[in-house]
Length: 125
Image 1 (cartoon, rainbow, N blue to C red):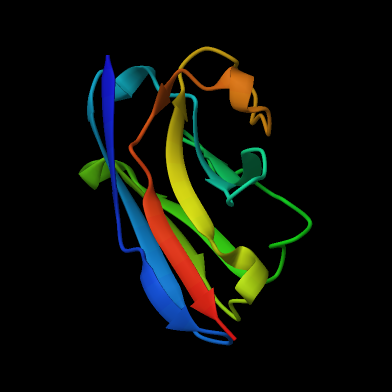
Image 2 (cartoon, one colour):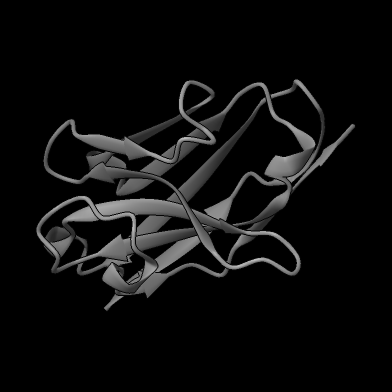
């Protein structure tokens, strides 16, 4: 079992920055990949970014490439999502997820085994 707790969401004006955090506990040593997904009202959950837990590899959605940066601190069992140049279309509930078994960085929600409760990010125009 892995427990994930997100924090750092809030209301921000367009063009601003926010940093989300996701603290993991439990069997974190089994983690392959940590990812961030988001879901806006009336839309399906979509991939945002992911990082390989035991190396530097990362993966980003085209919509956030160059604006968002995912990073991890293995000592703290925490993954971060630095979001810059935020746009109103970034408004969503952001979820942290852990993949313990796929073996590659995946953008598919179905690859992830554990999910956090989500944190709301609202970007005003």
